[in-house]
Every structure is written in C-alpha cells, then in structure tokens.
Length: 313
Length: 259
Image (cartoon, rainbow over all chains, first blue to last red; front, side, top):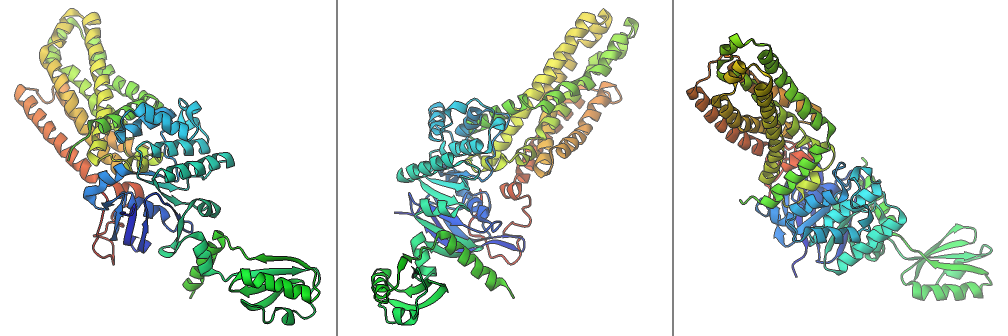
C-alpha cells in the first residue's frame, strides 16, 4: 500500500539558515507518527512544507498519495488537515460560525451535520454559540481540533494538540487520536510531551535539523541504551566482585552507592535469577533487583546531548 | 483553474460577519461618509435659488464618489495583515482555498458593504435635497447624468481601492499602517472626483467614458498585481526572498513546491 507520507531528502533553507536538512522518512496509512524536535528547530517548518504552505528548497515528498508539487497543492490540502500550535480562530465569531467557514472551504456535504459531529467528538456541543474570543485556551484548542476534522482528512497533522489542555481534555484528545487512527486516519503528531508520544505513537522520529533516529520507542531504547539490572541490598556486599563475577549474560558491574550495584547484562531474563541466587548464596539481604527502564525522554535527551557535544568546537 | 463559488462564499460570509462585529470598521463606515456628505450639503442648503445655475447640472454631488474610493480602502486593510496578526491566516492557507478564491472573497466582502454605504448615503442625500433644498436648487441637482455617473463610477472606484488596499495589506506588517497607506492610496481618486465636482475639470460624456475605461483597465491591473503579490510562503514566514528556492544561497534546484 502507498504510504500516507513519503519524504525523500527534504531540505528547507531560509536564506543561509537550514531548518530541515536532507530528511527522509515514510509514514504508513493509519499510523500515528510522532515527530520530536528541540524547541525552535523547525518542526513546524516540516509540517508547513508537507502542508504545501512552504516550498521545499530541495528534495521531494508524497502526501496523501500525491506528489508535493504546486499543481497538486489544492488536492493535497483537500486530503489533509493541519491543526497548528496556535488555534487561529476568529475571536468575534462563534464556535459554529468559525466551523461553518471552514466547512465551506472544504466544501463538506451536509455541513450542519458535520459540524455537530466534530463538536461532539471534542465535547464542545454546549459551547457551540459562544464567541471564540471568550473561550479558554484549552477550549480554543478543542475548537481547532474540531475544525481539523471537518474535511474528513486522510492525513491529520497535529502540532502540540494537547498544549494547554487539562488532564481530562488531554485524555479525551488521546482517545480521539486513537479512534481516528483505528478509522484509518494517519496522524502526524508533533509534540514536546514525550510521554504522549510514547503512549500514542507507533513510531517516532527525533530530529535536530537532520533526522537523528526513527523507530518504535522500545527499539530506540534498545538502540541507545544497554540493558542493565540495578541490585539493592540492605548492607553493602563484603566482596561484590566475587558475587557478580562469572554471572551468565553479565558483562560487568559497578557500585553506584553503598548497597546499590548496576550490572550490565545482555539478557535480563537470564542474568536476574542468577544474580538473585548468587546474592542469597553470599548471605546478602536483597531488597530489589530491577531492570533499567529508559523512557523516550532519556532517548531524546541522550540524542540531543550527543548533538550538543558534536557541535562544540 | 476553476474558482469554487462555495469557497468564495465561505470567505465572503466570514468577512461580513467579522466586519459587522468589528467596531473600528463599523465606525469607519459611519464616519468617513460624513466627511464627504457635509461639504456639498452645506453648499447646497446655503445656496440661494438665484444661484441654482451654479450647480453645474448636479456635479457637486459627484463629491460623494469619495465614499466608494475611501471606505473600501479602510475596510480591506484588514484583509490579509489582519488575518496574519490574529493568527488566522495559516489555518486558511492550509485549506483547499486557492489564492484567487481568497482574494475574490475578500474583495467581494469589502465591495458589498462599501457600495451599500455609498448608495445609501447618495440616496439619503438625494432625498434630503428633494425634501429640504429650495425647489430651483433641487431641480438643478436631481438630474440623470450625475445619477448615472454615481451608479457607474462607485463600483469602479471601489474596486480600484480594494485592489490597492489589498496589495498594501498583503505587503504590510501592521493593520494601522495598512489602513493609513490605503487611505493615502485612495487620495488620487478623491482628488479626481473633487476636481470634477467643483468643475475645475469640466465633465463631459467623452471624459466620463475615458475615465470609466481607464478605471476598468486599472481594476484588471490591480487584480493581477494583488494576485502576484500574494505568496503563501511570504505571508506565513514574513519573507519569501530569503526562503525562495531560486534565490536561496547554496540551494540545489527545487524538486517540489507549494501551490
């Protein structure tokens, strides 16, 4: 099946500044794809470029099955929707009037019904006649999300969709993303909330001008971090070297604190029981043996740190 | 290229709703006509019946053509830069809306209320002349040629002001600056109608036809100029010269682009 988005060597420069450099990736139909970048590194530029608002300096892309060319601009925009980070609503118009305008622009059949459906999806039917200027930031964000749903997009670009939302509204948005994805809508999610990306996205791309890494969150963890076991005992071991030496699937060990040891292991399911047996045999009181669990945030910070180090003279 | 009437209609409806609720636009539509109504009315009502012949066949009322020249320039100043300032331009540009549909929708939304105000004020002035002016003065003013001129030239002048105002709004970074420049740009039209209204330039049928043809040509030129100035990338990022692929330094040839 044709990917929903296919990007090949995409570069976008603004004068002498490169916002996106030689980026290639593809997103399958129905996938929730996370796009993580440091602040100000131009993730919005990528979304705007794929949304036909900006012209790429070089490279090519296919969006919603259509090559990203000037001739396809209108048709691509008909098949996608972009929810920008700033909701961009008309403050003097009511929620319904805002949505009526965009239903007209998408030429949606039966706009009244479509608007009702979009408002129900974001739980805003009760505020349909309120002026958008009187709504809180979170509610405006939800109106913007409803607006993005009006055209029944094949690909939905969401730029920080839960910024400013309370936990309940955030959960609602997450559920909506899940529903849309299971309905076949491709979601391109840019976010700074790494736990959100980890929870929602099948794959994530981490970028810092160039594409630094791409894959499933657990793949990225494995790629960047060695598996380790953290062993905690009530009292420091008298001879830790004799306890940990020769354990199967264990590459080495270090002491972090009195009574706390970190074992580098290749297979935790083999090393953990062996370590437990060795500790008991040595007469240690074992408080815990935990496998290290690196979050997506660790992966992200590790990559950004490596970039920082590489850029230093 | 086909223009979608539904998309143009969506822009027009949205604009009219916004104008109606925008205090500064409503007050501009109310105040600017007064500037053009008061001088001729004072002259007309102060004029003795014996001087009715000085009214030159109703030409003083052509001064009212300043209304369709100035009002749309003020209204349309919001069209692009206003959207950009309130952050609503980008969501519009990411819909299937074409550049031509955007501009047509904006232009029609400025033209309709401007013409409505112009014609309504003109009708009110005619009614007050008929009711309150001396009969000889009213008879000198209420003649077909200036009435036809008003009906014909109001949309031509308004359209020219709209394209000028829109071009300024497209390139401007601030609504107030766009408004001021738009008013300045409409002054030549006001000057021309004033010269005719005060008979400094003597109006003839030939002159009227030439002026109408010239305005038609200018309106077509204005449309092309505004369309050429409308660049999605520049409007969103603020500068296209720095980001245009052909002008960017060290950039390979573009393979894809924005429409």
